[in-house]
Length: 248
Image (cartoon, rainbow, N blue to C red; front, side, top):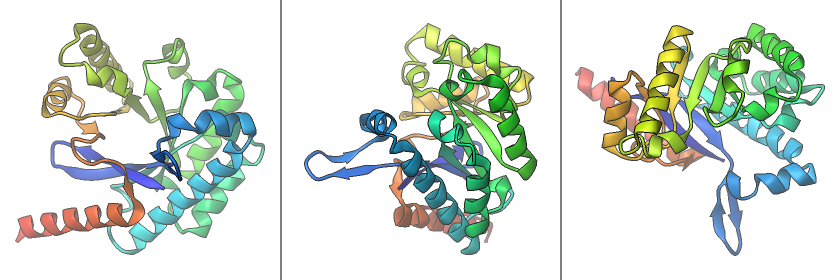
C-alpha cells in the first residue's frame, strides 16, 4: 500500500491522502494499478484485493490518528472502490467493520467512485451512497470529466468532491481546451458547493494555473509521489514539525 498526500496550496496543509495499491513484481518491479487492475477485475480477485485495500487504509488512518499525526476534522483517507466491489450485497457492512475494527471515524473516510459504478444501477448506487453518508462517509467522483455521462449523473449523486482527471491537468498550461474544461469543472463545483481536487499536478506552472481558476486542493509529484506507509508517516511528522516551528 502507498499513500499520496493531498494538499491545500494556500497553506500547504496536508488535507488527506489517497490509498493506492502497488504490486512488487519480481521481474517488472513496482507496478501501478492501471497495469494490473484489469486482470484483477477479470479474475474476480478485485473483490478480495478491494476489501484488503479498504481495510489497510482504515488501519493506517486509525494508527495515524492515534499517533496524533492527523486530525479528525482536517484529514480524509481516500479509497478507490471498484464497480464489482461496490455491488457487493454486504459492502456497507464491510465498510462499517473496517472503520470499527481500526477505530477510524467514518467522517475521515472518503470513498472514490467512477462513472463505471454509477451507470450500472443509478438508483441502487444512490441508496448505498446515502446509507454510507448517514454514517458520516463522504464520496469523491474520481476522474471527473473523462466519462460521457458525468454531468447527467452529478445532479442526482450525493457526492462531496470532484477530482479533476490528470489528463486535463497535464496540458492545462499549453492546451486551451483542457484549460477551459478545468475552468468549467471548478466553476460548476463551486456553484454546487462541492470540493474539487486536481490530480497529477507535476509542475509549478500547473499549480499556478489551478490557483488562478480557484482550485486550491491537489495531489501529484510536485508535492509528493505515492509513499509506502512508513514514509508517508515520516512526511506527516516532517510537516508537523515545520508547522510547530513556524508557530514558535
